[in-house]
Image (cartoon, rainbow, N blue to C red; front, side):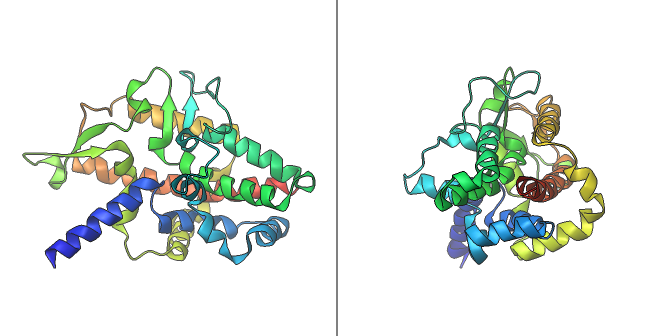
Length: 265
């Protein structure tokens, strides 16, 4: 039984590390967004993705696994300069912001594009809005440890008072929060976020895409000021950062709705 359990843990760990958060949490973000779509935006999603839109939360990763991707894996990352502005030299194939911007333009001019192109644009926005709100997906010029998935020490004992800390990847640190709720379906994630943060929806979704990127970049930069490969994180800090992670998930859902509502105005 112990061997089976360990195998499941390893499998789940691999699944979680492949995408921002895990599939159920990403589904929760999309379900949360659908609760706030205008009639026109909901119609657009229904027309092009039907009732299977939750199957698209890992669309870009699925293309990569099938070796059918026309983008690089860098598309899952925000690339910012030292002033926390979009870095120069990026394209829609290797930067999340550029990928979203290109997809938004396709949706705004959807009458000039094929059905498959509109479908791809919708799926791309769904995927990348999840990705950019994962703090570990922000790369900042001049901050070396933001350029790689570094390992750092993370205590698991009470208040961090333990003789040894487990090495943990930066991406895994943000992903495993969603693993703390193994019984949550996408619908439950959405319901929970709405109950806990729904009153702040206007605040969390306020602004433009560039405003959101600035907020994400500022948040990541503050964490990178003290978290790096030499850092030892206490259990208390690890638990406190769950609240930030949860808020970023809600921001992703509410902002996804704002983008989709905006392209049909």
